[in-house]
Image 1 (cartoon, helix red, strand yellow):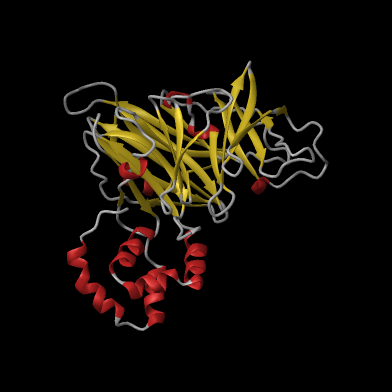
Image 2: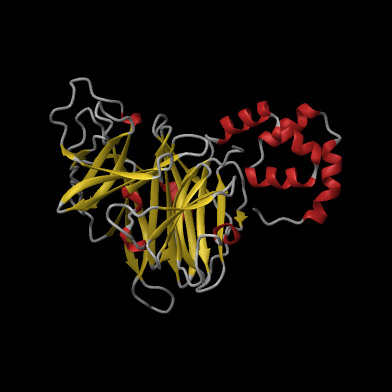
Length: 396
């Protein structure tokens, strides 16, 4: 599952096992899952500790609050590797997934990483337009039946318009929204029934009960991302009396401030928006097309209690953080998630083949920004074939 050196670890593992069991459990609780898997394969005593149901319960409870960033990179027409970094570690972990996907993929398949949640990862074969589900812990892999819209290549998926929701230890739902005859339609795949369900979204909040549902019970999926107006669907995870989902169409407008000639990049996700303002500049050779970060603003506040007509300005990245992350770039993309009151965003930029990854977070309760420095992911000259946030990997 993870690259490791068994020979260099054996001596340290023996000494580790001489510690009291309480200390061993406490140490294991602070390790990332790839590290635990390596220890489990090296020593039977450690394996017994890890397999204990009370330890599994404690580890899983703690792991679910951990945030992971996964990057899928590959060489053209050659091997591919999934890298993961979590907010409790200071290193990247490598996951060998080629052998796990081999029963499903075919020679020449172009595989792209879509999204992840807990232990479930979704990939798409750009060659055949098929979605592949992989459980990284149980190593179960399967092809998801085509949605009612048929096979879809990489360009058909928009990260802010889809969501993977874990519904059980081995079960999940995959939601995405798209326009069908100019009307937003929600498509939901259930791994439990291995079937798709589709529901046309309703405009606005007309006809909803006077007591509005909680935002925490909804996910927000973007349909259209425009410079001045967006189309977003709010999807309740609980079904209505007819066993259907009831997606609602929201149309927040963006009242743009004067940009003073700055270039604007908007990144969406979970009912929030990051606005990246950049100014043009020349590099040492005087080449154009090079930009430099100027400001990063957070907008959002899409709420079902009425504040959904406009994107609301929330905050901007402090100057101290901004000065630490400013680098020239030629191209930039990003993804954003909101979970447990924390908004996380990653910006991936490229400058002459060199990739740079910026991880930012904003604590809504404390109105506090944080920057998580990432070590080099060694992606120079490689193709970035997917990036996504996820909750923590669990033992079951």
